[in-house]
Length: 231
Image 1: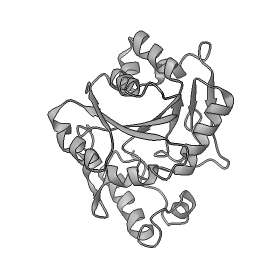
Image 2: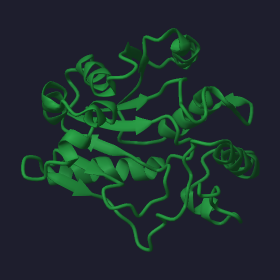
Image 3: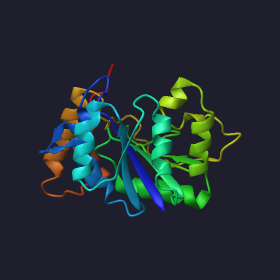
Image 4: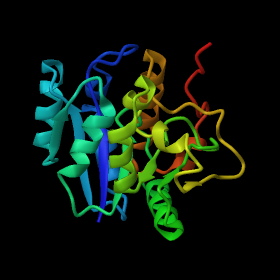
């Protein structure tokens, strides 16, 4: 069983509330969930948010989408993620996703999961050596490695970002990477800033009405095909 956990919160420092910002009439996270539900290798999708009252509207919206929601620590994201995974002890693979990626690519999610299982890896990423646009990030994690990280990590950065405890230790864990040629690492499709959100809204406005399942290649065909890169 492959469990995808989408971590989300309303208290983004640079663009508060972005996950609920409207994109073509639907909250941004809803657009991402719609795309993730097209990934053939995701068996269960769970949203992990915090117990902070600011995340009440987010949790209620996700529940309206018939998504299971786990609520944990606002600041210790690693512990929140581990507890969310523990709610599904049958999961053999944990897929980590973040809710600032409304252009997520279901085919890439499937590719990372397949690579992870074929390599019998502890951690597999589409971003260890970045060759995909910022905003197509996906990681697959062995549950036992995630639990070890949650038990042992003490560095605040490793508590906040979930997987650095694992990917900083190649002598301990088997790490795999998925890449593409030519590299698209110069493209920015994540949403951290107002201009990122406007770019995403433009993509959806141009592509979604004719093809709700629009592909990465369709985004690449647009001009411009990236949000401005922050200075």
